[in-house]
Amino acid sequence: MDAFGLVHVSTGDILRAAVAAGTDLGREAKRYMDAGELVPDSVVIGIARERLAESDVQSSGVLFDGFPRTLAQAEALGDALEELGMGPPTVVNLEVDDEEVVRRLSTRRMCRDCSAIFNLDADGLDVGDKCPKCGGKIYQRDDDKAEAIRERLRVYKEQTAPLIGFYGERGLLVTVCAVGEVDEVARRVVEAVARHGGG
Image (cartoon, rainbow, N blue to C red):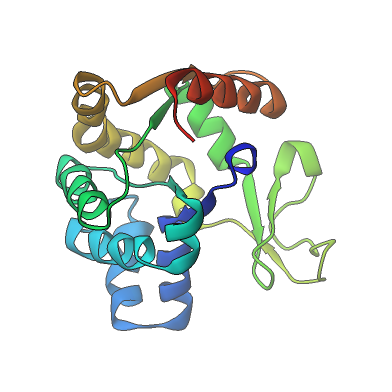
């Protein structure tokens, strides 16, 4: 997060890179991701632990995007932070209703070559169009299709929503309404984290 000088780490990006490279991990992860299911904890925890130990994260701190997603991941993250001498996390819970989540994700498009992200509504780019940044082909990820998104929401409620209580009970959670313009939501997040003492 720029406001706090943190290193942004998206577990989804790391996993998608493994898929693109065709590694054993990537092939295993792809089966779950295409179905809108969570990648197994053991795979994600290993990736997160390795990333936490890298020098840029050690010196600047980290903003995890998409991790932790299960209680096992949250417990493993707590152990890893303690082992590495890092403080407890500040966890941001962005609140938005299911239909808005489906709408936002199902209009996301990406460039197959440079991985730039676009929005069908905001940018007017759709599958098969040319990327304005590199000329590559625009596509829609399989896990951004409505059916997969609804499955992801079902899995979220079952496996990830319990983290709200887990972190709330420990005084580590801030909840922010994520409805509105991007800049406005970002401002709310920065203010909430600063009030909480994170960053």
